Image (tube, rainbow, N blue to C red):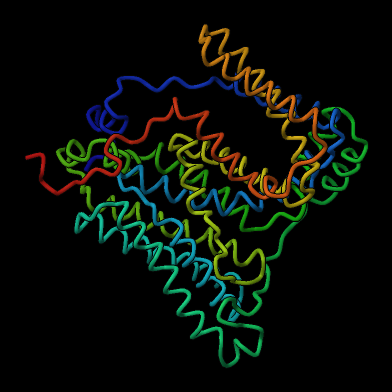
Length: 426
């Protein structure tokens, strides 16, 4: 088959649209980023919550975001080929277990490979059940989640609760300790940025803190995750292979008519999806040096939510995962007082949204935004901290709010989750 994409194939891959979707221009994006930085810096100055933009906070946010982003990236591969993957959570569980199992016996890099293979095995099972046998994608995904949870619980009792593993600290709920993968710090730059951050200058110190968190104690696994995002964008949007794969998620009948083996592309996408989720699970286990039962804690589902927020594109997915990671790190590092500062930040963002909606003459939406902004301002003014229950729930509340606010602009692949049988278009 020719490597040049035909107009019909392009139309199938883009859902029948004649032109590119309307996107924000680069200058507008930079203006939005600059505005967000100014607002966050203003909140830090007003509230005195210096941890909002500290290097430690950003480093923690990255560590929390990476496994979620990898799970979401796995979901993106699968759903762009038309297969819904609710089983990301189970594939992450397989990644945590096999990553720790191989890691404590050999070295952490072998553990990462084992976690990737464990997740890929879950992806292969999902592909066989959904693509070959045509089982409903949601049912298959839920079954894989349950199966992974039960299988790892059984294997943990067999492999971690006896012999050498038990002697080194293993038990039915956890593995023996795993060595960490070395991190790196950019020499000179990290120390200079930390010095600037400690002056607490408006905006300047905030930018220094953010950049410092990105160049201090960075795991090599994080670098690999970033490269996987870049590689995914290039492969899926810049190559004939990616065009054919995306056409399977938009219009598999049209793709088949052009000679695309839809089954093969779906299999590849779902196996890659499982491998990426398994990588996220291995990252989770190795970063804390141990496997624990229930370690994923719903991160596979949150990765799926981040992918939806990102409109099935890598850039938006990274932003969604970053928001969750940031809120998770915030509640872990300083608890109630720092999370309390988020109330003011949310209020200011809602005020900006009110102005935007009013500019577009969407008066009802502007009124709703203004009402919520007023509630947040009053809440912030009348309290000094947040209840512990809300602090612990902060990442999940942020996820729900972000999804609710972005729901109107989402567009999933047209054939995502729909049954397909070879030759059905004839």
